[in-house]
Amino acid sequence: MSSRILGRPRRTLTPLVTVTAAALTFAVLLTLVRLQWLPLESVDHGAAAGINRLVAGDRALVTVIKAVTWLGSTAVLCAIIGAAAVGLALRKRWRLAMYLLVTSAGALVLDPVLKSLVGRLRPVVAHPIAHGTGNSFPSGHSLGSMVCYGALLLVFLPAARDWWRAALTTLAVTIVALVGISRIVLGVHYLSDVAGAWALGVAWLGVTAFAFELTRLAVGQRVTDPVTEGLEPEAIADLRLAEPETGSRHARLGQHARIAAGIVVAWVLILGIIVGVGELITKDSNHNLLGDRTIPHWLAARRTPGLTRWSLAFTTVGGTVAILIVSLATCVVFLAITRRWRPVIYVATLMLGELCAFLAAADAIKRPRPDVTHLDHRLPTSSYPSGHVAAACCLYIAVAILVIGHARGWWRWMFLLPAIVMPAVVALSRMYRGEHHPTDVLGSVLFSALWLGATSLLIKPNVDNRAGRPSGPIPRGGLPGQAGADAAGQLSRRR
Image 1 (spheres, one colour):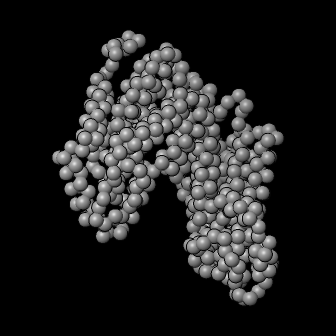
Image 2 (cartoon, one colour):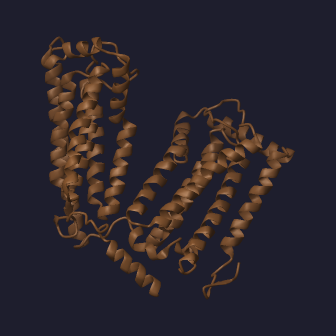
Image 3 (cartoon, one colour):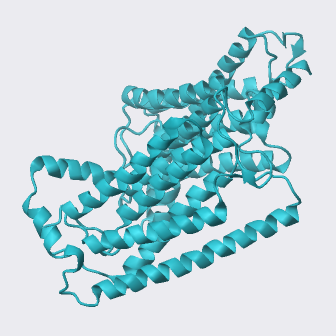
């Protein structure tokens, strides 16, 4: 490759040397592992056995390590990359979104293919503390974390300035290092598995970054140094998560403190109300208030295979995974469109408060579940209130509040439909499956109404925090701030 492209000399050959060295390192490790080179095998097996002896008896340490290794799991990486790609697409940075998706997909393809070709068995240790599926070389968690977190760093580096850039780089490197080390400590990979995955990840990132540079050349843009400038420096306006708020820092801190204090006070009072209602409901265990005894039996007597399948689908909608996915998607979409933290803080506060209140109330009341056959087993909490119903009410109504407040056109009112239907079908499914009484559902609806009202009044999710006035509707011609972003890009290209 020429040292000059478009008349601009490359600042350094360090990235090229690093990528080449990483590729060679991976090739050497691949060859040695495939040939079962005795010195390498001895080091790998000895390290696996020694680490297992040190860690196997410490349950607290094992729990922490498993939490760390979760950051490199396929589900977490796909969620993070998917959210980032959606945000970039909403801000019309299509090439960066495609870069994230293609680069991450490459890691998903390389890992199983190489494992199948090498065919190395996983470590066998005296005291297993984790289990890994498939072959051992290279480490999929290590490769995925290197590629995904590295790609995110290259994409969003232009938006970081001063110490934020160092902090972002340090965070990415630390996560990648800890995930790789956790795989060795858990005894599911050898040292060479992780080292080979890291080397392959660096090489793949280098190849994809070079390919991205070729796309820039194709449209006449200047060549960048991805390690110091990021992949697309002129996209800085769109890469910033949110625009800064106006007003003095002292005034903003004071306002935020007052809102936070109000939310805490409201949460405590609402929790007290819900617990008090629960105590009144459960005071007489033989009551039949609102059909607490007859309705669960009536529903259980009318179970059919078809209705049971539907009830599982509807109860999943109110489950932790589904609620987390919808919450994350809502935050990403509204952050990308509005360029404001207020909708994100609103959703996060709402759902975190709901979760904490549900756990606290369930622990305080300890109400037994209905005396019918339960279709869900080993549920960790008591019957009152229904966490599924409370989560569905808070989330889907919050989505409707945000959409109606920020969008325009008749279609925004359609979001009232899921805000009404989803909590209803979740509630019906929970009672059908024998997990809740009608008054459990009533308590959840009461909590949701009070908590939604309090957070909406205090946080004001549809208010523009720059000027304290209602934010305007989303324009049909593009995203808010897009014109400013385009102007910033043009100015950068002129320079």
